[in-house]
Length: 245
Image 1 (cartoon, helix red, strand yellow):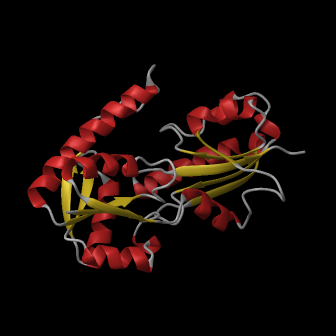
Image 2 (tube, one colour):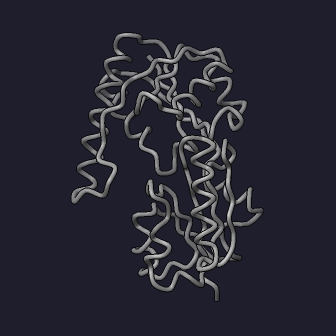
């Protein structure tokens, strides 16, 4: 048995030749279904159709999407439930299975942790191939470098943005925003004068870009996020915040 973890960016348009070759050699793709009208599953299906590989759909266990008191425990429980669901399919089908990962598997994604667990239980070989990450796409679309000369860039999920700002970070890439949008921008004092480079559904349907002073572009950002959701049925956004010095 073999499991291949494949980064696919935002869909077929971002599949690298290396990942395409891996897809053609797989017996099937293992993919979660989060709802009856899971439009992200439809994108995975389009990847499978392009490269002629079967799709094995697994109902995804429910997860607390808010910010529970014990976030780590909530995520760990969800990971274990997903691992058990995948294990049943892998044990039955065997062969070479591929798992498609949004963006790149190395950045704010737990598929590698999941597959490590599965490989130990099933005695499976496994490997990882990279994809195009959200920060890469954000920088390309805005034609920027994510950091200033000789300075660091801090990458964080949106729920940890306050912590990053209070720690003195001044050049921050934010991913995994909430379903209601980056409300943290208006809630954190002092951010109004920072510069933002924001993008939604980068490289995919409903792509939107906004750039400017945070205090000036909040209404534009909310409208752009609404358009992205209307066009695609979902929103994945990321942004760079930089303190003006």
